[in-house]
Image (cartoon, rainbow, N blue to C red; front, side, top):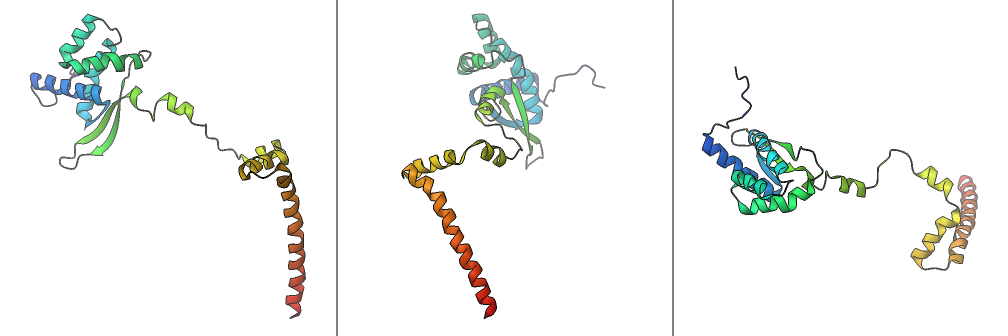
Length: 194
């Protein structure tokens, strides 16, 4: 039984595992998204999320604690300068794991692990910019609300023709359709006679 054994040792000795997780954390902080196995991603999430929480308080002590885990000045600087202000109001859950399938050589389950606030497709700002999609029909509501002249005015602006000609155009089209219909009606009996 493996009661109370929460840490995945990843088949490595302690020093190798610490170095692996430090390197993965550095890559995640620098690139905001990395591709790895699911087991390593879950171990990395447990490793890096307390460091990100620590970075919310920018003191010398917290920088030294984070540096003792990451062992890279540039990663620590990026964590405190870029990532910490962006995740300041988030109470946890800074990483997202997206499964991508299985690796070709050994069929290991692969995934992307990314920082949640740095993916534009999922952030709220990107969703606010888009118009909400509805399943309702738009044609009936707009036609009933807008008068015919309001619809004809934008056409006048596009074609750069005077507004009077545009207003006359629907009348010309209606007048043009009637003779065509009469001609068609006259031709049809003529064809039947022949």
